[in-house]
Image (cartoon, rainbow, N blue to C red):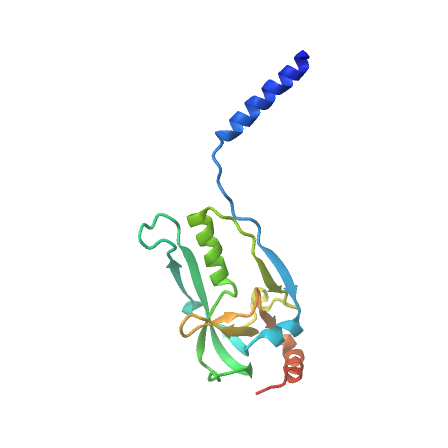
Length: 187
């Protein structure tokens, strides 16, 4: 056997045995976003409202993933508060104008499952979430009133966003009303 092959073989053995002693830890992969159109957002939403952000009424709680041992970090759930100004579309139930609603993230329960699998089972997942890109980001611009696209939530007395960033500037209200008309119901 040639000396260079022996050297390569020894280096290979050293590297492969060293790799066996490196601790393996899973890391959460990157979240991917699939774009959603305004038309699809209107179609998928069960409630579309004009609302004012009420940050002082936001609530949050830590959701434990292992209540018995508390060994792993909980996942924080934030409910954002809004005051309804006008209801543009409601599939099932009517909420009175002026009512304060709490809205949870669109994908909270998927995030919770990914969080549990990562910490409890050492499984890393990369979810794909629907994401809307507002024509003009009213929240970032400090608008007092925006249009929200919502669904019923499994959490008592709360709603959830239809998709990531499922809100639009009040400047788009006429367009949204036209899209609602094509959906088949307007209040």
